[in-house]
Image (cartoon, rainbow, N blue to C red; front, side):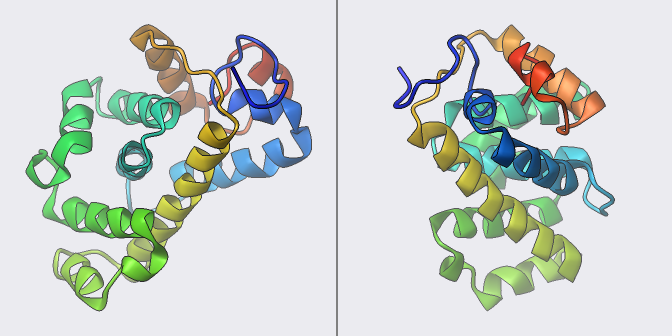
Length: 188
């Protein structure tokens, strides 16, 4: 049961967004820019960063929904997403992605945990300053989103099909939506 009165049956971040429409719009706009905006990192790669950080934060809703978005971008490759959450160093992702995920993991622990060596490793694997910047910002933002979801003890369904459907919709339509769509269960 949520710590505050949220609309029943509305999962994860959607409940607090309905509770506080004034903050819902900028939070969704930020997710849209970070995860779907113009970038040299693919939407799948950015969703993998969000998924990994959410898994490290043990935020079931966020890691599952963003994992579903990433898997959809990857043609339904849910195994890769599970591998990445378990141990990204052995997952079938590029060395650049592994270096960026290492940075994201450091951000999840605390911003000051990111070292010059972490950044140098990412650069050595071809990461640009923009990609390093965006990785840090995605990781930091998802620490906030995760704490928002779990700090209010929101409800998260356990059925994978719910997340697959939401993941497909978010991958195809994005994060900026009306609160009416959020209320109808279309939010992310």
